[in-house]
Image 1 (spheres, one colour):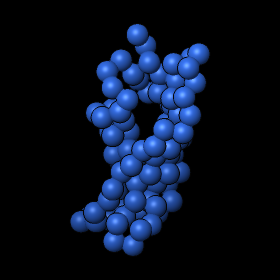
Image 2 (cartoon, one colour):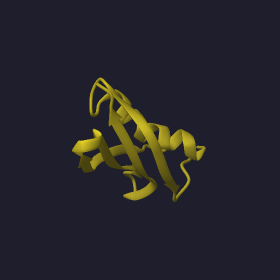
Image 3 (cartoon, one colour):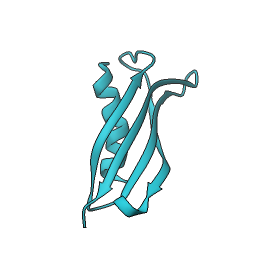
Image 4 (cartoon, helix red, strand yellow):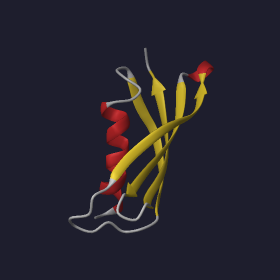
Length: 84
């Protein structure tokens, strides 16, 4: 699969689940480590790394992994901001 398609799975977790309404993405920095092939199962996960209260910003660490061998396919740093 194309790298941006894989990283969109990570961004999708933030966009649909975290951190909630009123947030938007300021930027993404992704490293595409390994390819993903048709039929492979992948798991996307995100974890908050830092909260910058004064700016209403949260920095996230995202990963896309292949459970079959435990390898990381994509690693991403995501920055989100609360607008309300």
